[in-house]
Image 1 (tube, rainbow, N blue to C red):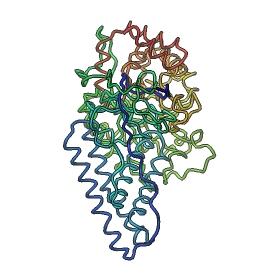
Image 2 (image 1 turned 90 degrees about the horizontal axis):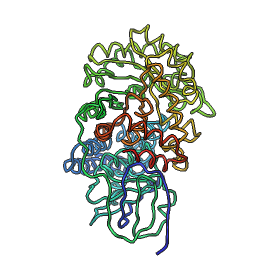
Image 3 (image 1 turned 30 degrees about the horizontal axis):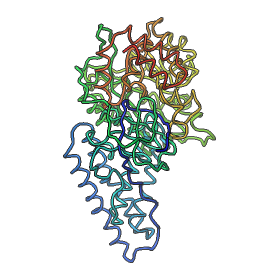
Image 4 (image 1 turned 120 degrees about the vertical axis):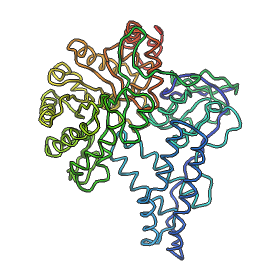
Length: 543
């Protein structure tokens, strides 16, 4: 047997081996010709096709529970989105395009908008691509792309997996997930952890690997040819957590949710989140051609805050700019938007937009009864932090902090801490800027592994400042969702961890089994490591 061996980024712990099943590739771009003989009749095919796709997704949703059910229902809702379908119908009637091509183009507009929004919203573009491919397949009379029916335990190999694919997976049949694309913050990574399935992403060359079986190590990222024997040492069973972030020695670490919509907030509350460590407010602005009024924002925010009445919620002000083009902001073109006017930098030029948002947040806090704090994204200096805090106070918001996602802010954490009430580390962007590696590019995904020693050492600088000054330090990037890394972060002085609702129970349960001195030993081991794999091994040793 050959010794084919590849490596990627391990994103969900455990080891498994077994026969390979390949996930069907998405359909290519459908042709723009021939023009339909009857444009009205061709346009009329679109909604019935959407109905079929919705029906299939809802039928699958009826067979599962919890997170998987929510994801499938959300995908079904996207497939019946009136604006998407109306736009596709218009392309058929106005430009004489075949229905499949019209759907592809209409979805393309939504996908481009989400990708331009960056970060969390860009990751949702994958959802729309999945809906597009399902609609196109139905219109062309082809089988829908995605995971085939599994006859027995298998290792799934794919270019990437759509949320609807991962949501319906049966952990008793899926031994492991391996994708050529994706990264540590991808939906595949998030859901694989919640299902307890070992997973490795960004495995370059795995699709070209002609082997019948693979062994997968979700801790080291190692993927190699195996003899076909079925073995599984993944996480077994769903973790149980009592809803309180507390170590076995009584040390408190708040376990919070990351939310970006009312549905997210409801899911986080249902999963037991002690509050919200990151409320992304962009959902209120993304499709707006004009700035939403204070009253419109107030209602939108209150809908997210209400499930957390009496609990802490940290609201991040608008993270927009040239890389997240919102029409009403009229951004100037920039040669490198990721390094340009984004986040709080937009507010320096348009402070009135920030002031109106802060006013709406303060009103929504009163409406909902949530204990609301605000924080600014993309802060680089203590002077910027101080400017934001003053504006928040003027709006009547008592507690204000900043995101630390630019290395400069981490290096001056002591000065930043002196002017804020708390800081929150956005490990996704901090890693991206630290390594000069776009977190949406699979070729550099390994650099965005949250176990990279350089990132861990930078977080330690911030944690030390927090301990010395008494400043609360949160982590709201995807690093917080890894139970073992959550222990390391706790050992470095982090006081709260915020994550997607699917990760809450796993992190909460893991913290309950450990103590602060063990977390500090794990942190010391990870800090001394020379690469992500050895950092994980060193962190696991004390546990």
